[in-house]
Image (tube, rainbow, N blue to C red; front, side, top):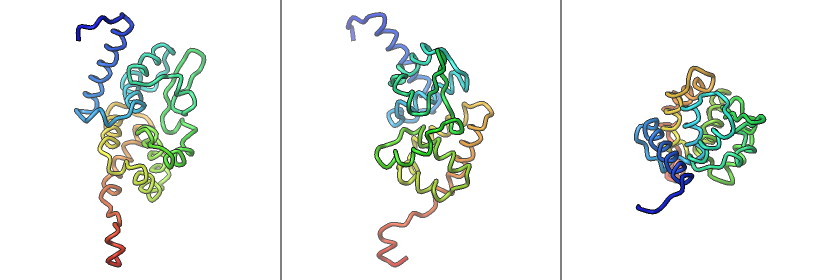
Length: 190
């Protein structure tokens, strides 16, 4: 635009553009605006670092470029800080997932939170709860949710998380295409 930028502003701009470029490649052209910042961070972390832990400053830069502040993530159960090291946790490692259902009743969940909880429900063979949860959150019919799950499935190395996501993806057809009762079904007495 011709405006003067500081070096710090320029570096932040470049990081953000790189993150968006990477996400467009990973998500294969899906609408980035539908992917919330926390899920952007998670997908980019898994693509960049996998399950490795990294120094705080590297994690901070990735989070900032994704549109979030890493220090805001300490209490959400997704990010673990040990001294100067940062780890991002998968669905089996998170301890906060039981509270996700209650949180979903009050606010829109980030895709990654809903995905992790859905993976646990799938693993526990709680198909009815899984379908109810995904319907309640609006993710059952959400293209962004399933695109994010597919992208993670493709970029993750062999792991328990990858197997959980792949299992959830395989159950998508049963969940998605199961007929949901409408008000007209009740009127018709069906």
